[in-house]
Length: 98
Image: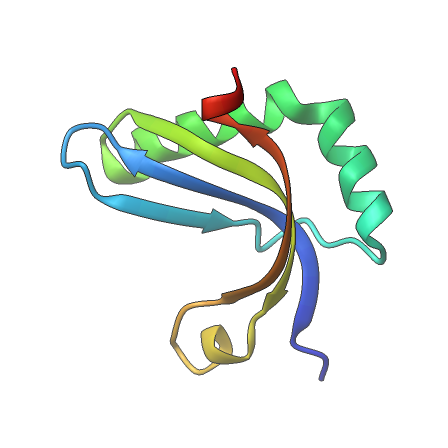
């Protein structure tokens, strides 16, 4: 089983606690980096708004999105109960560049 997946990621900070929280989609997978980038660019507002709503629901907190984009992620540790590891990322949103 291939545990390397191209997906969408986000690096965030929970506003209420200041805790860093990294998210990676475990339901959106792409065959190529370019497919992911195209999908992200066409759906950025929906992706970021969905992430904000997910944080409100799951963590009961507002978030600051520091960075988001596409990434090659190794899910082998997640399969064993650990955290997925970002191997390579293509940042497409950066809060400091706004």
